Image 1 (cartoon, rainbow, N blue to C red):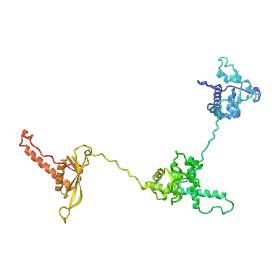
Image 2: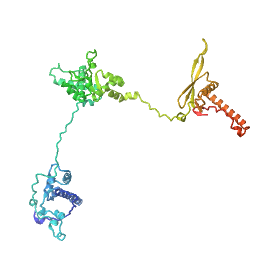
Image 3: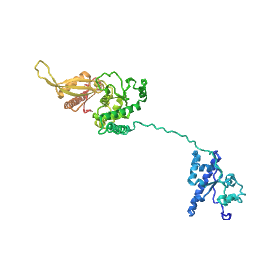
Image 4: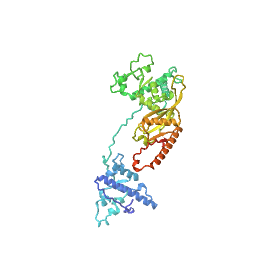
Length: 486
């Protein structure tokens, strides 16, 4: 391109004050490159509004820092500060758009280093750029060799992630013990048929047999023991005793011919099944144990925890089995619905007569019980129907019993008189709404009113001196019906 047809003019510029915090020169150069990238994107957006579209190949960006160019074009992981700004630059531009310019031909240094105001109007580097910018791209300065060691790189530490494979993962996929056993038996049958010869005589077909179900039980019992008792299993297989801190030490454990840990003991000569003499040891925390308890609980018609544990102990010895037995029954929805727990209402406060200190039988309650048949006299005497009047002290809860010949008001008044003669006069007496109690209350009130009239009529003829010598009769007891003092 001829020099006469190329015109370079300053369109816009932007600068930013360096941060107060001390930082490195390459970081400041990277911040300047990011500022240039954002300014170019803003200019392209403004020109697009005027229907002037600049293609990416026609946009060139210049910097005098080789480290910045190396950061933009590298694929090595960088530090956070550098990585964030390089990612923003690569998002707005491509690394092929960046070129290196000598420091002496960089107009941006006039902003950062400063220039005299009088020299600025005649500065061609600021207004028209370097001289070689008018020449074809083949005459532009070439990018120097990038440094081999780039600063601000991030060290990558390789970590080997080890995942523990759960050998009991399939047991957590099924919630039914029999379903798990049947699937295990089918898988074992498939493996057996694959290992067998071509002849069909050694292969297994048809329904699942009892022997295959027992093999599945042995398989899951051995896997559960390997997960719950790894140290005990290795010690017993090596012919050593279990550690004294082990929970199996008191069980005298041993390994049978199938590789299962069983309980020892002194029942080897007992005429009971082998599994009862030497049950298989399982942990209460194992998922296999939970499936066994849930299955047996449903099979035995939702049996209780003690009977459930006793039944399972015929074949398996569960370490801390009472805990899982109670948990199985408590988590059963049908058992919970069949045995609901009623919520007891809150009791009301005790009445004042019950909590106030007083003389025994000063505040009492009474009721009748019976009838009872009483025979008095010689032989062949007809029995008579009688009742017992029960007096209960409201304060001390003491009881006084009186024999009553009938339920009439007169007999009750006689009983009340005997009671007060023995226990003292009552300040209040409580009873239910019995007819004899209501009649007695009416008689006592009429007697008290008549006595008050006699006293008031006799007091009109007495002087104030003789009034002090008058002895008034005691007030009769107050009888209460339905807990209300009358």
